[in-house]
Image 1 (spheres, one colour):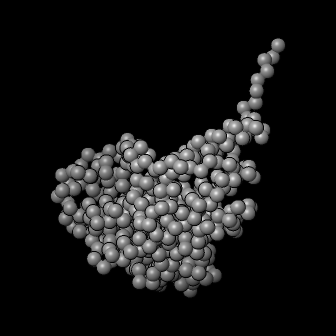
Image 2 (cartoon, rainbow, N blue to C red):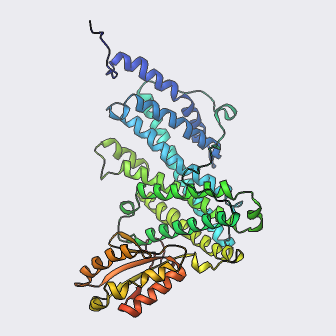
Image 3 (cartoon, helix red, strand yellow):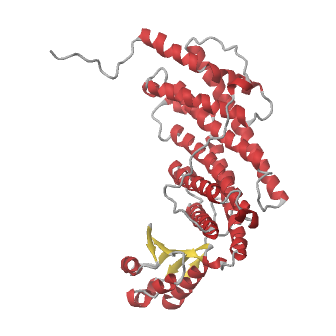
Length: 447
């Protein structure tokens, strides 16, 4: 006789929803509503611990709702979306408060006026999103009342509710070579910082000012760079923090600070873009998403993304590049062989006969003189200029288009290599430089 087994998934009836789900939801939201009541009373900025407490409670509630499939239920979908919205707007506030608290302790080279402007921008941003968070909190309370939840009379208890914010992790060294020489540790961190800073800055500058910013600067892109700078921070803390070489090369602390500021700004950007993408009227199939978007000003999201996240990320990364020049100098290395540069070059169509394998292949010898790789970017493809094989692939592809029109290429690598390669292309095939301007955020920024 075959033993009968129950299905792993069961659709709940009304009585089960009332007793099990709603009872559990009322219980699990108790502390959150106590914290939100405290937040709604505040006339000044909350501390980071209170905002972190919101984050902790929302994570737990979101898991509870997802376990019961609330995002697929008409009655509870809106409540689930409000919780998700609070989560991401709350992250923006937390990261903003963290930067505001830490900015004076960071080791950065910045004029007093610049720092004050940055702090004012942060305060303005935090104030705006606190207002939006309170709107979401009031809306959430209204939804809870519809479910018959009792009015929460609990007082917020800071000592019992708050938790230690710092997260401890093992050294993230799985994909890292263990470097034994202290100078090599500094060198690896600096080169990775410069390489990824240049990649991020060029990405931002490649976004057309006329293009919808949230179409180009997606959550996927911001998560990619957020993860990179998070790994850089971990790499620095694992190998350089509180070491003798950090004491001797004081400027290293500034690099660590620029990495940290950029990381927190990207956290803000990712949270805002996630909210925008999830609740955009363009992609949402649900009327409730339109309701949520009316609670948070999406025009302001684009403004924050452009004028805070992107503009200040590039500003601080460029300052880090300047500091790196000093560090390489103190280490007795030629900074121009390691500081990244990017140039856009235009190859004129009428010079087609000068741009073919034999006269152009010396680029591999030029690039090969330098320790750091130099790359050619064309038509969304990346070619290592040290590799004869990769160049033998790239040159015919470029020639095919060059037969019809001028061709734009981009050269990226150490300054000396890029300068020498561009000079070679000018002489050999009449290439000329096209300025890289960050029109998206500021016409004054030049890479």
